[in-house]
Length: 392
Image (cartoon, rainbow, N blue to C red; front, side):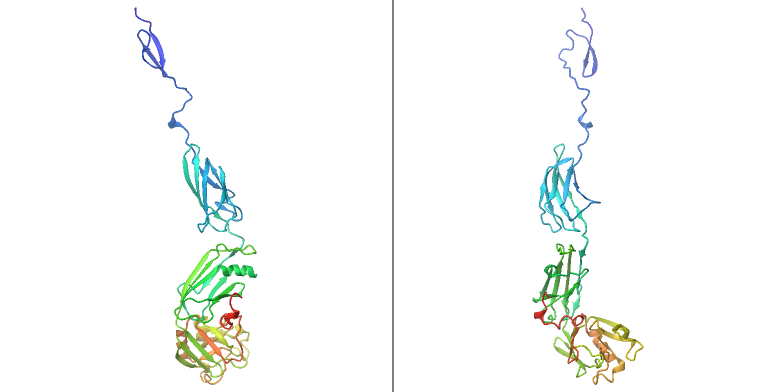
């Protein structure tokens, strides 16, 4: 007889067939309706490092650096500061915290090994920037890079904030270094709370190379002020131009590298306005300088007042002293002193002198009735013995 017709469900399909004993040798499988193909599974989130307490990606410098990991487990963290030095910290499976506070206005680098929720390892990086401190100390170095200056020119550091107290001033000095070729052992002197000068025991030798390095990146003063960054300058010393003004003989002898170039007739300050003695430095040159007596306390409309446009003016002090052209006093030059404190020379000599000298050249005034004013930048550097100079 013909067997009865059977209907069998195989793997979700309705199968009809004939034969004795049903579908011989056919295996029936079953798939749970709740199972989802692997290609349809939700993706595993990629882990990320998140700085704690950050505002717009910037973290506070005066707190430890803390980072957390999302969608993963931290396995290792290395952190370095802006100088590449290792920053120690404490690691957990979910985060890392530095052992100390940070440097302000700095960028740190974190490298982390993280395992995601599917067991895959990721290498992550984070570069958090720290906030600025309330007060920042900045330095300007002078002379500028590549300059050629005179043998009397000191290194000058000008600060944007006053520094007071021995410990803080020493911390600033410790952040500075000067290298010279040939080698010279010099010292720093605080001219004011915002300015330091550096010089050796005597004038620089002609041709000396000078490099200055100021590293304030880790400088922290007692009032909470932090130093800012690194500054450098390199410059050289030119020919030794030294001019000696003899007030009593009314002459200026100008030498270059020890050789006399010219002896110039001069007229210096009259008794009422004597020219100050001592070593002066060339500070600046002005081809046509307006000289106004009111700027030195003499009213223009007084008998001693003046307002003149003076050519070929070489400033040697901020108190108003210049070596300059004075056609009006040529008859007195080499004979008597009639100026208001400046060194008067003839127009011809003034043009020659103006073209010769440079910033930092020496003008030494001898046999003067009045000594130098040490608070004046033109006279502040070489009228102090070196034994009293360094680190004072």
